[in-house]
Image (cartoon, rainbow, N blue to C red):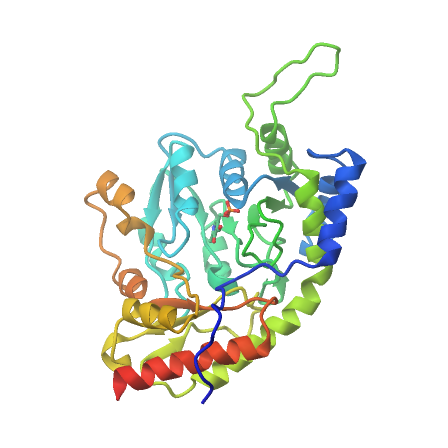
Length: 374
Ligand SMILES: Cc1ncc(COP(=O)(O)O)c(C=O)c1O
């Protein structure tokens, strides 16, 4: 077995190279600091990549989710059904629309929203359903789409994903991506909405900036937001898009190293990946069953930190976070999500890491497991 690292292994550092640096320098020299030709080109290239009719570039994945809901007309008094195993932004934007998030429990296998539980949560106030493609594994969309309600996908982890052969981004009313620093297309900050609906794209475009009039004086036709994407960030995203295939090959290798290296460790299991789908390989999440693995997830995370291995948690169930717990005190328990929230741990994964780095992480997990179960 390898020895402990002497330097800390970051959980998910961005893979930024000289081409991104050059693209930023070129953009700054061009004078386009705000939204301009690079943001427009990113929209065009992402529409082709995502096989979507329209892509609108925005300041963050959170803004993408928020404006997508508003674009579909979600407002006060409405309910939106979503998963608790997500970043809180997914639920926060429902609140920002004045609507109520209704949390649905998740599947044991991949921790995505469990479509069989959704019909019981639908009421006459249900305005949309928001599945999340956790870690890059598409949620099971067909039974969700069959319900006939508007669907907004949170595809922050799913830039490369396909559901049963169909590109995520080409399927539902609106699909939202993030360009945050850790994401597979990392611009630092940024977001995209992909949609085949011209009305939704137009509504989002008109809200992302307070629209100017055509005359010499400015005018306002809607109380817009400030949610546009800077060309400086779009320039980084364009280079990252070019690198996506090369990065996928590295991610595939890293997944294989983990699958092989962690196989057989009692009580440590990766989330399921459905072979019918294309997984975006965004996060390598394991579940740690404290009884069999000899220690809790928190104890594993601490021990790995001492081994200089950075990890993260995706995710703590949103409905159990203080703000949502206090706001909705009679929230029903969601047993699968709540147990998963205690067990999930994401291991280092990034095209910036070498195979040796991943093997260091594998061996650190094996050492901790040996200590805890020995
Ligand atoms: C599942 C999920 N949804 C939404 C977001 C929000 O994206 P952003 O940080 O770009 O606002 C993130 C991550 O950042 C995420 O992981």
